[in-house]
Amino acid sequence: MRFIRNFCVIAHIDHGKSTLSDRLLEFTKTISERDMQAQALDDMDLERERGITIKAHAIQLKYDHTDGNTYKFNLIDTPGHVDFSYEVSRSIAACEGALLLVDATQGIQAQTISNLYLAIEHDLEIIPVLNKVDMDNAMIDEVSDQVVDLIGCDRSEIILASGKTGIGVPDLMKAIIERIPAPKGDPEGKLQALIFDSVFNSFRGIIVYFRILNGIIKKGDKIKFMNTGSVYDAEEVGFLKMNLMPQSEVACGDVGYVITGIKDAKEVKVGDTLTHSLNPAEESIKGFEEVKPMVFAGIYPIENEHFEDLRDSLEKLQLNDSSLIYEPETSVALGFGFRCGFLGMLHLEIIQERLSREFNQEVITTVPNVSYIAKTTRGEILKINTPNDLPEPNFLEYVEEPYIRAQIITKPEYIGSIIKLCMEKRGTLDKQHYLTTDRVELTFSMPLAEIVFDFYDRLKSMTRGYASFDYHPLDYRKSDLIKLDIKLNGESVDALTALVHRTKAESVGRKMCKKLKEILPQHQFVIAIQAAIGGKIIARETISAMRKDVTAKCYGGDISRKRKLLERQKEGKKKMRQIGTVDVPQKAFLDVLKLDD
Image 1 (cartoon, rainbow, N blue to C red):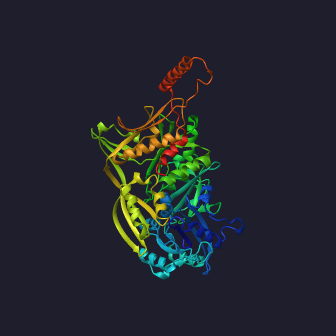
Image 2 (spheres, rainbow, N blue to C red):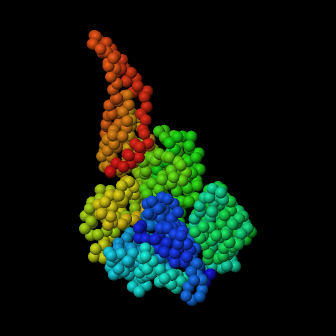
Image 3 (spheres, rainbow, N blue to C red):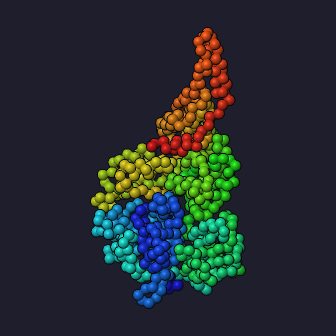
């Protein structure tokens, strides 16, 4: 155990975590030059295309140090985007140290600070690394000062590195050995291993990744999942290299994998504890937090007969992404589907994309919303996940919505426009703090529902990308929220129903009606698009009927013949309007979400 080091790489999005990990893989010859490619640990096409890390990736490196010993490094490369911070928290639980990466060209940003606090809470040893020092616009002195202010370390402790050229990698290796403590634990004790990830393999079932805190796990052992109580044989155990490396045993302090042939996704819970079934540990490992979804949306198959396929796909996806939460629901407009919980809008987008690519599932997503708490006049407290769950106004006492603390770090010249944007979104400024002369931190309290749609995009565009954003849930607060229904020819479309603040109801209603008028195709009859609050119509648009020229075949002759045909057409259109249904194309659901574009 003296020669094991478990650490993760944490940073804000785009500060070069995956690139630096590539250099560590090269330096320790874990990956041959022939197989080397950029973002070597990111194995999803989606990650490569977008240049972001979505999944945390664990890998073992062997390093021959100058003191003559061979060290074993278990490295976990983590995502930087705020939506994937659950991956970071899981990785931190399996480590003793963290490399805190700061981009020398951009300085400290919001996610740097929140990831640092996560690591400090778990009592990790922090090694500050200044990345991209080879670039012409690197501000080494200024950013070093920021790091010293933030962590309170000595300037000599900051390692200058470049993920692109490999500068500073030998110093970094030395620092990992000297500063990060070796894992503690009892190799002779009862087995306790923390499950921090799992993946589904269609041939071998579920592969479980774990970190052993006490004891030892051998091939063929009978192991027990403490949360679910199920017992399995460890068919294969081993280490995580670029490919799985089978071993006869994985010892205390190490990170490894186990294959037990489990096919049912419900059997494996991330954060669960593995132990021996014959000599089990007394208690499971504490300190792992459950993920709370922030944004809810309905996901429905385009064809109803694909419902079961969609269920299987979501089950397999949940193994690989334990923060995805789903339950079945039905909609009048869309049939059978699932109500899913996500950590943010990027997470929703990624899940949609992965369903399409990895499982060939084309889906319709309803308007995303957050969960509310409602109290009825009878004193019942209800959790509202969809706008249609909200009781009628005459049975409703009050509604509470979730609030967040938003932390924005930016340049002073953008303060005015950011405050204006946050006020528009019903936010209140709590604190303004200058980190340095040209970096200011703004803290707002605002409703989560207001940042769900386009807040991040608008923030980025108005600050030309010089603002970083991070948020944490606060509490639920009373709010004047009402249900906005969209009706087509008097019929409510439940997939377009939304909960909005009373002050914004009219403008949102008008925008939705206008947008639907542009999107919906013409029918043979007139379509009335209305936005309603209860029985009151607050906005309306009309799509005129497609007109067929029924008099085209009349050449000359008496006018009464033409009139007769037109009257008959009028009667037909009236009847059609009564019995005709309006088809809402899938594109309409997606476009209505982008109201503010």
